[in-house]
Image (cartoon, rainbow, N blue to C red; front, side):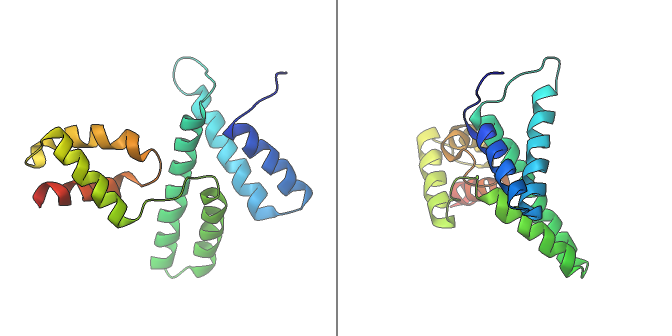
Length: 154
């Protein structure tokens, strides 16, 4: 077996540490994240090893699920279930890059609009194509789209 490096290997080491420390929330969350990574690796026609960027994308997707579930549980007056989702979200966020503030996101969206020369919402796809690689996991797609819409309508 070859020695793994990168984010997936870090997740596996941290899972082992959490299991040794009997940290059930952390261990369960990391186990779930690694399962999602493995599922992504075998999805499609051929099995592949995910890059750190791909693993980060999977973790971002899992974090978004936790955030949305916590909101749904809070709305359904189930604070104990919402607290569990928030605890899992906190574990996942430790592996994500620092999120962009609204001001930073607005600035980056404005720069991308100026760079593409977009003038209306029909050019939103072009702006998103330029902006997404620069953001790379530091903001959710919905926030990015809202910032681009704001920049285009300004």
